[in-house]
Amino acid sequence: MTLRLTTLIVFGLLIGGCTFSAPQFEAGIRFVERVASGKSETAQEPRATWLASVGDRGAVLNPYLSGGLTVFANVDGDAIAFDGWTIRSITGFGLSSPVSVTGKDGTRVIVYGGAQTTTDCDAWTRSGLNWEQVCANGNGQITLDNTGNIQSITMALGNKLGIVTLLVAK
Image (cartoon, rainbow, N blue to C red; front, top):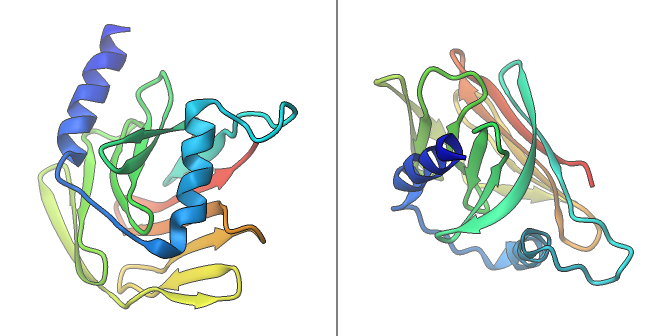
């Protein structure tokens, strides 16, 4: 339990300065708030779990709200902070140090293991139920269902770290 508390404190310090507002994702945020609180619209609806991968390492995560971000985390210390458009930080997943990400459109900076990588990203565009973003280091995608709930999130981190994927499993 002490390791988990320490991990959450360190993770909180990493993501503390990030804020976000996107009216398009209000339905998705309400969905995450509902599952994070354990409340369901019907008694039959189970709490959502998410399957995540960073590079070639996977984990099962639960969503929690923290400082305006959705933090997908588990008791093993794996955690991903998401602001509604961009993954902001990652810890665990066998990484030697946490990953932090700043920027949304334009210049995005990824810091890992003391090294800083910069990439350029276009604005997000919508095509049906998909939001897509083209970045120099790889593309990102957010997929919604017919009711506007987020179903999957994909973001490229570059050659060293690969792709981050979150997929709702229910």
